[in-house]
Length: 297
Image 1: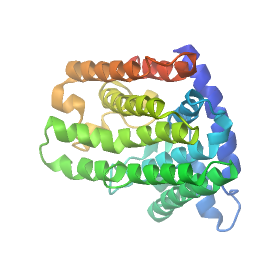
Image 2: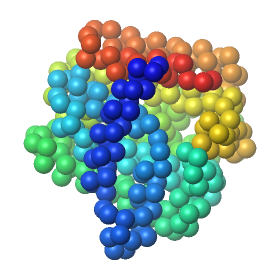
Image 3: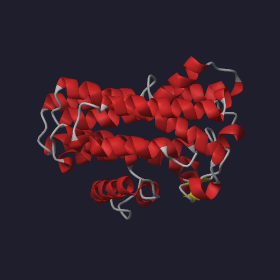
């Protein structure tokens, strides 16, 4: 675990340095929106999703620095989703990563616009950043399309919609898995595939990394469900038990803690199996699975 966290911190440092360069200065007019962008982007977080983009590029034999714009785009999209998730109309959370949420600091209107601005900047980085890095137009187009799809009604937004409307009705296991794979898993999958595609991965390598990304995302979300029940506010950086308060359906509420743990471990095993044919170049990805498997739940 300590080895993985050290490697993750190294990748996070690269991502933070790049994000600082890509984001507009806080005092650029109109200053309030740029302050809001930087407030949420640099509010903390392990940078796991962009780290997976960098790691997938490494598996494909591409230097990680070359895909930093794409990795940063993934992190901006993740941050945008958190800002909007925390809004009163969604999860109505006042704390994120131990700090007041964006709408508590800047008001709802600016928070909404900050999320929108991060989403727009993400696609600017995917396109302009990809061109500046020297990637072929076809690869840039494919990655941009896949990331967009991961954010749409078959991905992040679709999962969020079902999460919101499902709070007031019962759902079955198949719909819950769809919500998890869409709301959380789709961006993990896109993060891995973006690094692999831009890195020029062989089709078989891309296929294996795609399977890894899908199961990793599912395992991560199940673990998150468990942490919401078993963790505490100080550890989580946000109110514990918010899923139950918001009547959210989770693996814990549907199956209980024991079965949720079993399913998380099963998804971790599938993610590791997808990496079996790789060598040392995939060590970071393997350590990432072990990190999810041993999170404090």
